[in-house]
Image 1 (cartoon, rainbow, N blue to C red):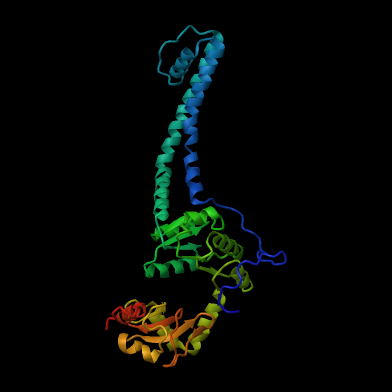
Image 2 (cartoon, rainbow, N blue to C red; image 1 turned 90 degrees about the vertical axis):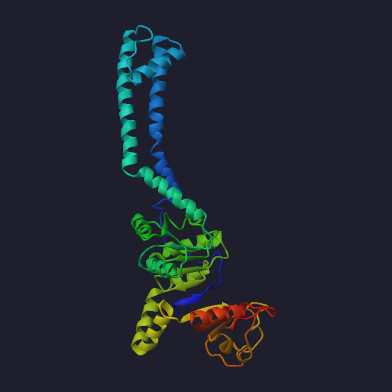
Length: 376
């Protein structure tokens, strides 16, 4: 099976169709919002313990001594805080026993409160909480970014390539170690299960330009692709298949492109043996930023000055200096062999090779309408 294949039928959920014949991964982690809430919950006992002891003391004095509510509350406060004021009224024997227990309970409660707050601050919990809140606000303000699910070896390479192209990223991973590694490299990262809708929403999938699903578990990849496609029907999704038979399933649940790493690596190794110079040339053109030679693609829209013209008539090479090396036509796939009489149609995607200036000139030419000047 091809290592990179296009998206097929997306939503065929008939009873006889088995799309997810794999175990669904358990929720071993919480999304970023839940992490923030969990950290906040650690302070709830601090906010409850002292008022709770005060309430116990007030009700106790009211029941044992028969004082009114104000006197009972006052006695409870001075007892718990051990400020040393005199008693409101002489205490009965039962009242003295209750006061002794209330003092011990109050001292324990104050000690617990002080220790919890100190640990929360010194252990970095507060700093981490505020940092994650700030990061989530940054993500909420992003638009046109890419969401990368899985920060393993493949996910890291995807991030490196996208960052090289100055793209904005958000990583989602269920491993705290992977999340910390991503953040250490300056990448916004969310700790959570990407198969959960709320996690994808936290990552800004509603505003994202594309989604990469690159975990090393096929069941997780299937679930993430399905969840993402349900949330957004128009987002481009590229997914990884760790087993060859999973490729078709990923396409069925909504992936636009599926990559089978073993097949890609195998074909690449064979090409390096048979055509090493060509492989080196492609690597240089694709990855060497210092080389003034770019391979770019452009779509021909209605109103373009080249729409409906042949390559000879459009004079692209003479006008811009860039060379058209291939063309992709809707319904026909990629046409690598072009003739001078090949006509450029609306909707075609052309692949051009040239220097940065030549490619920019070609972009201006393709985008120009009949009344727009073309820079020579």
